[in-house]
Length: 218
Image 1 (tube, rainbow, N blue to C red):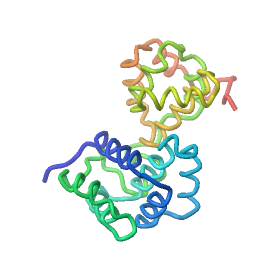
Image 2 (cartoon, rainbow, N blue to C red):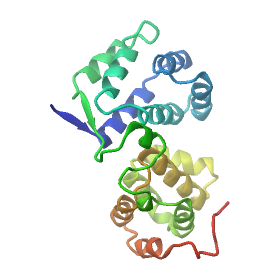
Image 3 (cartoon, rainbow, N blue to C red):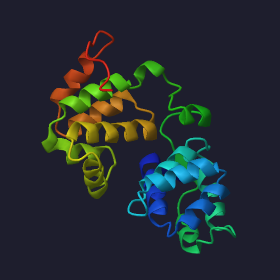
Image 4 (cartoon, helix red, strand yellow):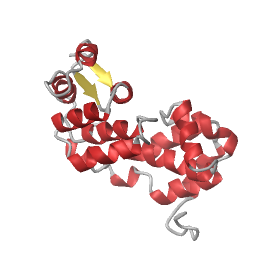
């Protein structure tokens, strides 16, 4: 049976979010997927009054973490083809895709929802590390880092503007999105840092520990 990579699946969810034309469509899709109305409303607020689709994307990502890889696309198809949503174009688009999402590791839906890998919790990145990295990340590497975090250029600039060009805060927000979306695997973060051209921060990352007196940025 053919399968879709987890990275490609995230892009599918992004494109679905981008193509929700109205708040009513977002409402109906969320309800068809069994998402609580309060969470749907929160996603619409995060969309910044229709200028962005980030809230809807995050809502779909969080929903997908509770689904099994063999069922998630099937459920999406049914929701898009439902009476409430009626998005035949999106239904036909994902109907041409593989039926299974390859999550990469053997994690349960419950573990993915909690952002916890069944391999070992000690391999997950702590908020302390993300705080430290965001403080030390050079502004000139911001967009390169965002690219490696699967955050598009315009979305990255929008996040930076949201934080009034405060690069550490914008970087911290992007890192938090990545951790929420993926679970925050430490080995993956090292690969991302090297690909973004900040190999020196891998050593900073390794040196972080419980004795870091700076603690959280908050």
